[in-house]
Structure formats: C-alpha cells, structure tokens
Image (cartoon, rainbow, N blue to C red; front, top):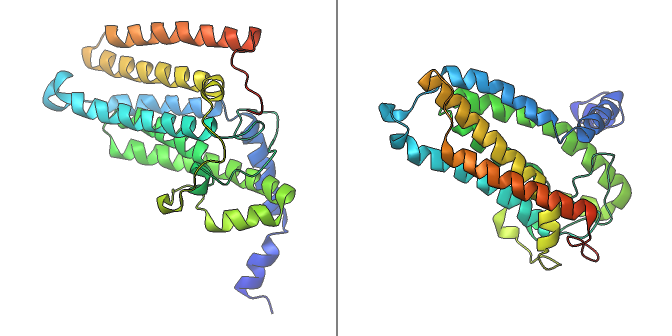
Length: 259
C-alpha cells in the first residue's frame, strides 16, 4: 500500500530530485549576475514611488532604514567569509567546492549565511520604494531562485561528507538563524580574505543602490536628477574597486595561507 510517507520517501530517488539538482547547478554557475535581473522590477517600483511629506529630506529616516538593511546583509557576508578556511564559502561559479563542512561561527546558527546576506542586501535596496507588494515579490522571487541552489549545495555536501554533514544540518536552520546556538569560530577573522572575496559585491551593491535612487529621484523630478553624495560615493567606490582588483590580479597582498 502506497502511503503518503512511502510516497515522500520514494520521491527522494525520483527524477524530480535530479531535476532540482540540475536546475540548481545551472543557477549556481550564474548566481553572480542572474539576480541583477531583479533590477528590472525597479520600473514597477518607480511607478508607485513617492516621498513621504512630499520632500526627500522628510524621507531620510526610511532611506537610512533601507540602507541599514543592505549594510546588515553585507556585514553578514563579510562575517561569514572572514572566518572560513580556503576552499569554502567562496565566490566560485564553475562548480561546487568544499574542503570541510563549516560548523562554527555564523554557520553554527544558519546553514546558508551567504544567501541570507544576499537576501538582506537586495531587500534593503527595494525597501527604498516603500511599496509592500514590491518587497513581497522580491522575497518570493529570491526564495524560488536560491531554494534550488541551496538544495543543490546540500546534496553535494551530503554526498561528500555523509553523516558529519547530516548531523550538523539536522540541528541548524537553513535560512533563519538560531542565535542561541552560537559557537566560537574555529579560525580568527581574515581581513584579507574578506576584502578579496567581497570587494566586488560591495561595489555592485553601491552601484545598484545609487541607480535605484537616481531612477526614483528622476521620476519625481521628471528629469535626470543626480544626487552629488551618491555620485561621490560611486566615484570613490570605483577607485577602490579598481585598486583592489589590481591587487588581487597582479599581486599576492590579499593572499593568506590557508584562507
């Protein structure tokens, strides 16, 4: 007799599981730029955009909140990467790589802290529009996209590390941190690794935030409206981006043994 439990258990070896892995692998290789298509939704947000009190100055509090959420996501990524060893929590897109299972630091609280950081960064950008349904759409699209990637990563880790991975995953939430489970990181924080791995995403988020605000300001003003503070920030960010990229490509200043 085929019960619901038997169906679920048997379903683990059915083609749907392989299909999830295949789709997740395809998305994994393109995870650096596919989320940028979320910016197309900016056009939906702009049509509903307004400044509370009808002025940009009076909306400063909400603007700071949206920036704060974005920075929290960036901090989450930096905190994650800075404490991990080489060949883990990387930005590689060619395929899955994991020398060990990270189980300490932020990984003792949540299994996918990097994707949690991504979610907060993107949500912070779209919170700027003050439109609840836009935030809901972004949340749903994000989950649909990254759920497949997380599934594929976990299948890889389960196959490679077996019971060690299953034991850790069984007590650690996938996406919502369980803060009381914090365990001290096994390694010290590596500023070099954090900078080397995150300078690109930091600059990308800066540019996206500036573009969103430029689009919104221009919509309200009905003309191209450049905010000098954001232009300055992007200019400084570009100089730092090019400098760090050169150091990474041409020197070993950002290299650190085992990290």
